[in-house]
Image (cartoon, rainbow, N blue to C red; front, side):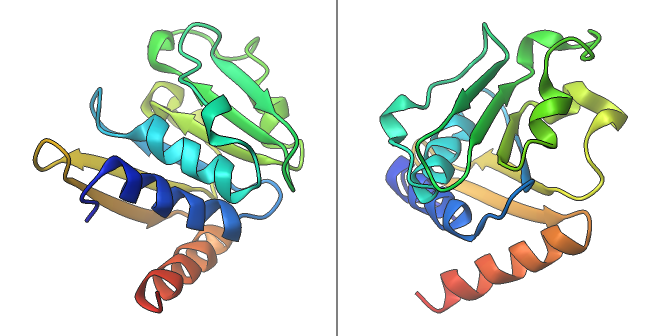
Length: 153
């Protein structure tokens, strides 16, 4: 449970601190659920200035450097039913950085098999339920590490 946008960002920061090359986070939830806030936190955990992270809705993909790993931020909101092949997103997935995908449902079966699915759900004005689901061996390890770091905090 996240009780504020600051709490959501701090949760993302823990994810970023635990992230390894080629980790993928698929963030879903309705508009205003906190996907970009969580993405800012992931970037901060990688050592990237969180203020640089905005929703890339109109350009689809933004790459941010300056952290311990490159950070690729995709927003597929405007691509429902569109062909993703010319967006550069497949190259980002294999570039040795961390990739965050907002609106991953737009990618369908093209999503990588091993990723952390994160669902953000409105509970109240500032309160969100954040649900993590692993889809493969690396993501299972990452979710377990996150669970341990949150419980141990």
